[in-house]
Length: 511
Ligand code: HEM
Image 1 (cartoon, protein in one colour):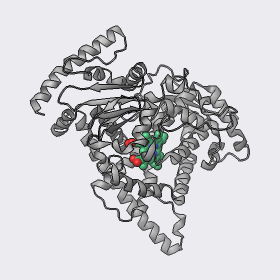
Image 2: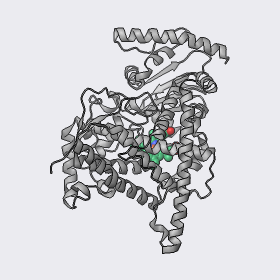
Image 3: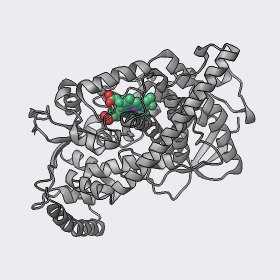
Image 4: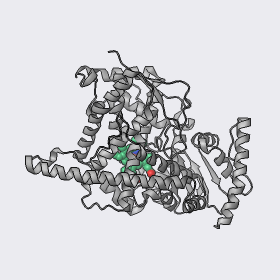
């Protein structure tokens, strides 16, 4: 498509966008996608882009879990939007090969080009198989657990204790993001960048990772030709992305250098002292002995950092936000932890209680709270697939080759037809069996937070272990108060982070 056409499109769209935004504010009504001449439904989505997840949820609830949307002619924007569990099962499992992520998805996340997150078919299966065996290696699991436990005991709890002692409010989302950045880097490279500390080293790399997800979101909402033109001209969000690219490359190169040095030092000390190598922690890099420092490795590292950091940091923030308004649930979790705590002694400075990863495996309320949070606030709020060949969905809708399918995970967790009348309520009981002793089984095409089918999340159990360890240790040792007057809303991004963070204040619990 010519540059002239794109410029004309932008000239048309900007005034229309401003008009719609003003009119939606003045009437304060919800706008169902209006089918405009030429521009079709594109303006309705643009005007609601700041609030897209809730807007899609409202439209999907009103239209029976599915709808089609078209962009202006020539833009190739032909969407089928769904949150229907039967369609989800069809797309992710039953007819999975017909719904690859596709070339457009790979282009949107070109920064991770060639990595597992952007590829399909045999390439994906091969990369997945290798990573699966690495992540399920017992030494890797033990090392991940030890890293998490030590970081909680030695850095997180003392830091929180200090914040409680001075009584200063702080952004718990930023803290969790730093915590997870360190953990993800440690499991990838075996090196701790030490971002979770009081003297706050620069957060450039954290900001750069956020930029990747924000620009990814922007690209999903634009005609491909528009954002590609912006990329070519290096303007708009794409300018930010190229800066982020440089920051991340430098950061990862520095980590690789540190890793090489530490490996050398370890080898020397092994020769001198005769240490058994088995005693060292393992990291993902060690499992790729043929590693070369090229674009593909860089893309894989970025992909892994995003998978392991953003998802957990975001989920933990939503957990704390919800629990701060539900003191009854906090009490239930504390009673569940109480028998574990009574068998052990509080450790470290300020007699803090740390829960070991294996100790948080059995408490089911803790897991129910996690799942309830992930139902309402899935950190990956939507999935994008392409239609390889014409098909008919279980809902009866036809999809054509080249159509884009958007699956709203955020909306799926909020549909009355799927979760019942109380679906907007935060209610961990819905995850428990009738006698309250077991977790209720919910199929992944209904609870899609960890994805479903052959591309289901490879880090689910690691993620649950890390989140439970943090939640148990924080809830046991502190009371958390969410500061009033904050505007809590998701950021327009591919990750459901809070736009303005979450400011909280801590108080050490009286035992
Ligand atoms: C709250 C925590 C987490 C949630 C909700 C989550 C969710 C997801 C989702 C929705 C996908 C599919 C993404 C896509 O289609 O592009 C995914 C894939 C993946 N996740 Fe997770 N994830 C979490 C934590 C983790 C962690 C901690 C790791 C690593 C240890 C991890 C490793 C992966 C990998 C490797 C994939 C790619 C699988 C594939 O493409 O075949 N995840 N995850």
